[in-house]
Length: 106
Image (spheres, rainbow, N blue to C red):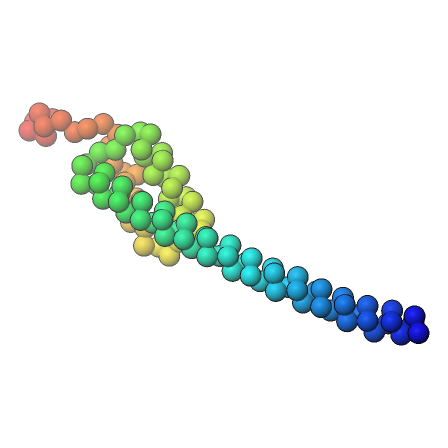
């Protein structure tokens, strides 16, 4: 009798526990992917907002350039789709000092 219990019921119990663990892992993995996609969307929005600001202004502070690059690298590691590469290059090419009007007239 104990052999039958050990052989069949423990196997069934192990199967139920394994199925529950797999379901939990799938659910949590879906949540992690959703958090990653949401984070990527927020990073992209910030890159666009600040990138347009600095490009329009024509220059960027050193600390802001570093922060922009770090934000871009995080976005890139989350699985970027290539749409931000051009803006990133433009921002990284901006001078770090404001262009004075008297310098433009020379």
